[in-house]
Length: 99
Image (tube, rainbow, N blue to C red; front, side, top):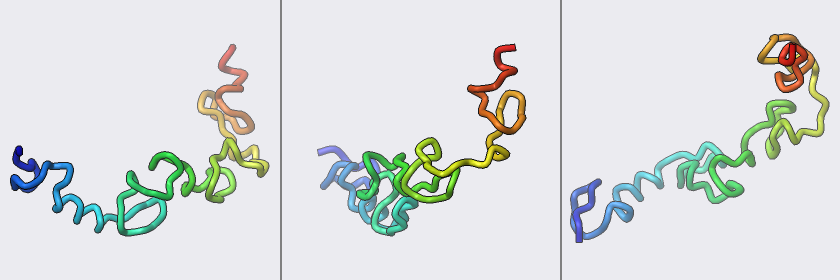
């Protein structure tokens, strides 16, 4: 058996290193706020740690959906185009884009 590249012991491979497993148990999950796993290994995430299950919507601030799926009307003043910097539309709908 090869030496563990983390702790240099020969009784286990790196992926089963007890030092890493102990460190993972002490980490904090930013998704579910538990301390027994890191975010990338969250059992509560839908699919992956990149899931939006625990992220707030940028539109309404509620958790569980993204702003594009939000049912609440968004204030047009908050909608600002990245091309012309005018409020009321997004860059994909910018009249200056096709000018």
